Figure 1: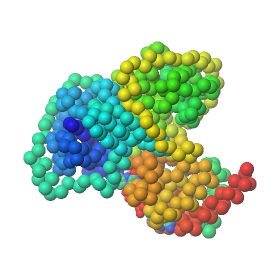
Figure 2 (figure 1 turned 60 degrees about the vertical axis):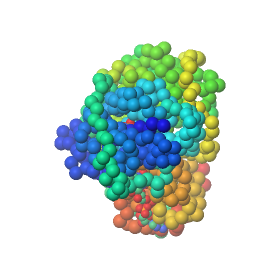
Figure 3 (figure 1 turned 45 degrees about the vertical axis):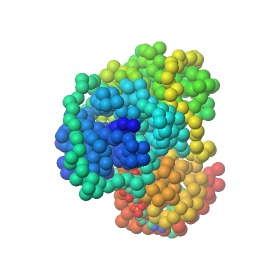
Figure 4 (figure 1 turned 120 degrees about the vertical axis):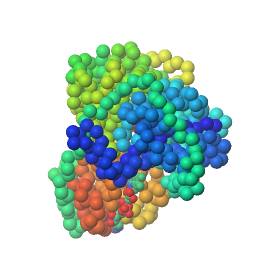
Length: 248
Length: 322
Ligand SMILES: Cc1cc2nc3c(=O)[nH]c(=O)nc-3n(C[C@H](O)[C@H](O)[C@H](O)COP(=O)(O)OP(=O)(O)OC[C@H]3O[C@@H](n4cnc5c(N)ncnc54)[C@H](O)[C@@H]3O)c2cc1C
Ligand SMILES: Nc1ncnc2c1ncn2[C@@H]1O[C@H](COP(=O)(O)O)[C@@H](O)[C@H]1O
């Protein structure tokens, strides 16, 4: 089985979000970039398929040279090879077309992407890829078992979960639950050393359409101070929620 | 050229988000000088859509489409788009809508913007305000393709009544080969419980509750309020609560009217996912807990005393206001 894990490179979850002076772009000054958490779960699941079922695992990212450190981390975790599509990932449709091309030429059986990138929260790349390639798709995937080309997947739904049967080729939008938090891997010294020897291919983007463009950004309005209610006077909170906030 | 809205239903009844999506879609249709067509699945009586600006509803009644199936539903919507000559499709931000949003975007070669929180800044060009960076910021995004898909955030634009004369038409999609290649074999869902996505009120608890055996009071508080229960990430990682309850940047997003956080410190990743809630209440022993800075109301106190007391007071309040 040939697996491609799509990795987006996102600001570390603790990052303060700021925009450039004219509010037209995200200000990356001082921001640490990491593997998108949803993709980290998927990558760990891919490692399981590699170790238990002999799968080959490649990782792909659409991005400029600066994403290579994130890709090296994925290689250190255990992916066999990396592919960087050399273009700015400005919109999800564009990114999906680039990845679809890599998937088609690479002949992957299983593509693991994330439910969403935690930065722009697009949540569209895997679905668009599925439609462009006309392959099966399971989103918000929290469980994945493969026997031959038969697939059993579990997806999160509002208020529960649903078990689905499908077949390869398949793309998933994964998230926490695909593997447990405690199973996530931190690259060790040996992995980091080995990653240096692994291939990281750079390919140029194919011609593609652009579908959306972020024009400007702004931040939520600052919050007023909290209104504290004495712990001995809980009834007051009920009154405030009813009369003032009008939420009960 | 109309605007098309996918109106979600459950067990044959339209969901609250269907009316929110329809209201939003009506606004877009008005701004574009056109009318609004809805697509519903397995809804016998869709007349309520006429209260929210829908001029025509295409009713799909097909046993194969009783259970949500992203690929098949996307194919049906694409066919409806063709029939109606629609240029704009409006979806909600439910798990199902987000599942089919990407598929539909790929099929229609449409720009898709989910998590939209306000009426469009403009319709020509189509410029919408959406949440980004998990509520730490907003983007004003232009959709530059001919076909356009907008996913409306829950509880952001709201449902607005606009009485319209509604034409109900049945719609019998062609359902080509291959659309049923990913199929549901089991749905595991506690029926009758409010889900985090649909809830007006969410009661959430964190590591401050010390152990899973202490969730009884959280569930009772939720019950009194008709609320959904949620938890912080470590609580689900430790297996105290199911993963589906984990909210925050890497969990489910919360956009309720009221969010009550009990024994949750308010880490940046937690706040990122819940800050779209309109009113936030924090109960925490530590007055320095960061969550107080992001809250509207707070009680500095021990959850094991405050929560039972709050349940009592709410019961009294309900008895008086019944
Ligand atoms: C990549 C990444 C992603 C993450 N994503 C998420 C996410 O999506 N959602 C999320 O929640 N977290 C997330 N986290 C974890 C986050 O950083 C925090 O660790 C977590 O939110 C803390 O959970 P908590 O508030 O329950 O626990 P703690 O931080 O331990 O807080 C417990 C609180 O309970 C209070 N307390 C103790 N006893 C009582 C009592 N008797 N009565 C009242 N209060 C009491 C304490 O004062 C304290 O404030 C993420 C972390 C990382 C690194
Ligand atoms: N620039 C990118 N390069 C590779 N994969 C990406 C990129 N952007 C998004 N993805 C994949 O698509 C998923 C959903 O991303 P998004 O649609 O941007 O929210 C991510 O979790 C990744 O798996």
